[in-house]
Each structure stands twice: as structure tokens, then as C-alpha cells.
Image 1 (cartoon, rainbow, N blue to C red):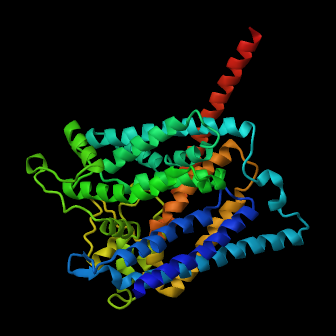
Image 2 (image 1 turned 90 degrees about the vertical axis):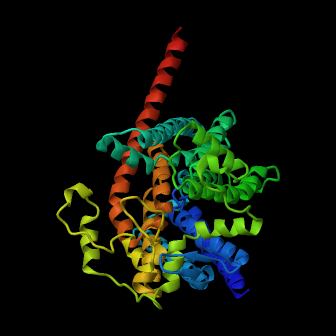
Image 3 (image 1 turned 180 degrees about the vertical axis):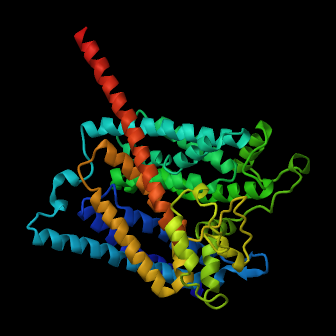
Length: 483
């Protein structure tokens, strides 16, 4: 009961700095580039909302490491507390940047640019046609990247093309943000976008890929919120209620599929069909089909608990629960500095540098997690847990203060009259920044330069294709008029 009370209080108290971030972002004229608000919103969904689901529906459940079973409730209170601290530290970082900017503008006798109406959302006229082209071009790009990813699963692809596909996958989901932005205007295109999202969701969920679909849903509703905040409060918007009810259930179904098959790669069309059937129907499977038997039927409270435990990031919960009692604060080491200096370079250029056994998520082995970098992993450390395990509460405050200041600075720098480049770049950066909360500190810093380059390349490609479409449309219109 104490955990439930603390979790709900933390969930509600966390909404205060988030609301302030939202209001300040609107006041500064950055609704499309409110990276600070969106980053900490999804962090609070993961730790605040997810932690509340764990607390409410926990029936003394435990999770298993290599060495022992540990209770979920052990670190829940501390995780909720440091998440709350990080939100207020981030609010302070955002306030520092906004206040400093206003002081500089006042000293230079400049009118704050937030008062300029061309910074406000939305725009009309050409903007609608521009956004329509962005939606179609980015959707085609996303479809190509996803198709190539699945092709690479079953067929050999050279290293360079495979690397380019992986790069494209880091920004391609920005298309779901554009769909949300266009949804209000594009009445004729809604069925196309809805069909694509559903097909993409079923493909991902049927293979155990919960995160890509959840990210897509989040990006879509973010775009819808930016374009029309009042859309969500209309009595006819039952799709929102349906999504809230079904997403946890589908996520748990998807997890069971991955646990049963121990693979995200269907072997043939028959395997695809069985996975699809399990996703929307019963999980019971015959031994002759797969050699395994599905788990017991889910109850509603167990489904919600499992959903909460997954979005809460179990590895982060474990780190917070066992540091510093079982593992002392790790601090900062010389290998960390080395990784910070060289980690932004491609790995094939640094073959002679010794590997640190604790780099990245490898330190999780000390906590009893079977991390195998050769086979991949799904154990996000998160910036919150990593700053805690290194420096404790002081680390959480300092890291999130400066990270929020950085995100706010980028948001303000991009605040200008909307253009095709700003819209596309904002979508790519929103996806990159928002889901960076899963990274540890070193990985976050060293990967940012590469991700920014990828976002710029994506912006150049999508913008060029949209401009070509516009030029062709103008030429065709001119030819028709001349006849």
C-alpha cells in the first residue's frame, strides 16, 4: 500500500514540471521542437506511469537474474523518487536557458522572438501541401527501410548496405510524427495512414517487436497533439480510448510470442500465420507446431503489471535497487574518458584499442544479467539509472540539468518560420532525442554526433524528394494551363 501511495503521488507531482515545460515551450514558440518536454514526458511515462502499474498490480512478483530471484518492489520507491528529482532538475535547466536568453535579448534591446507570430503553430496555405508531400515521401522511405531490414534477415547483404539500412532505421520512424501532424488536414489520406500503421504494428508485434510499434504510436499521437491539442478532448475520439485499452494487451501478447519462439525471425509463411493468430487470439499452441506450450491465460491485473514492468525498464529498476547497498557507486574511470574521446568514431577504425569489460551495458554482468553483445540485448540502462549508479542523487540532478539545458538550446535554435527542412529535421531529432533516455551516459554522448549527421542526411534526402515532387507538379500544372 505504501508503494502504491508513493507511486501515485510521484506520478502526480511529476506532472507539474512537465506542464511547466509544455507551457514554456509554447511561450517560446517551439511547439514542434519541444524536445525537452517530449523527452521527459516519455521518461515519466516509463518510470512514473509504469512504476505505478507495478505498484498497483504487484502480487509479490519477482524477476530472475543469473544468481537469484529479486522482488520488483525492492527498488520501486527509490526509482520513483529519483525520476521525480530528475524532472525538477530538468525544469531548472530549461528555466536557466530561457531566462539567460531573455536577459541577453534585453541587454541587446531585442524583442523576444517568441512574440513573433511566424513562430507559432500551425501555418496554413502552402504549409498543408508541403506537409502532405513530406508524409508521402517519408512513408515510402520508411517502407523501403523496413522491407530491406526484413530482406536482410533471410538473405546476405554486404556490410556497407547493411550499415546504411541500420542508419536509415534510426530516423525513418519520424514519418509517424508527420502523419499525426497531417491527420487533421488529410481526410482523404487517413485510411492510407491508418492501414499502414496497423499493418506495421501487426508485423512488429507478431515477431515480438513491442518497442518499434509503441514508438510509432507515441510519435503519431505526438504529431496529433502538436497539430490539434483539442482533438483529444472531443467525445467522438474513441480511437484514443481503444488504443489505451488494447496496447498493453498487444504488448504482452507480443512478448509471449517472443518467449515461446525464442526468436524474432519467422521461419516461413506458416510460422508468420501462427504468430499472427497468437497475437490476436489464444496463445495456446500445440506441441506438434512448435515444441512448446503457451503460458497460462492472462488476467487483467497480471497483463497491466507485465506491461508496466516492461516500459519501466527492468534493468534500470535493478540498478537503482542494488546501488549503493550491494554495489558501491561506480564513479567515473579512465576507460570512460577513453570511450568518450573515441566512441564517436566507427569501430573499424579503432581495432587496436583495448575493450573495457564494463563499457556500455556490459557492467550489467556484475548485477547478474546475461549480456551478450554478439547476439544483441534488450536491456536499456537508461540515463536515469546510469547517472544514479555512477554518482547517486547528485549525479541525477547534474546530468539531467545539463541534458535539459542542451535540449532546450536545440529547441530554441530551431525555432523559426516553418519550412520543409525544419519540419523534417524536427521529426528526425524528436525521434532521436525522445528515445535517447534508454542510453547510458557515455553511449548517449558518443552517439549524438553520428545521429545528428544521420538526421541532417535524412532531412536533405526527404526535402530534396519533396522539392522534386513540387517542381514536377508545377511543371505539369503549367503544361496543362498552356493547353
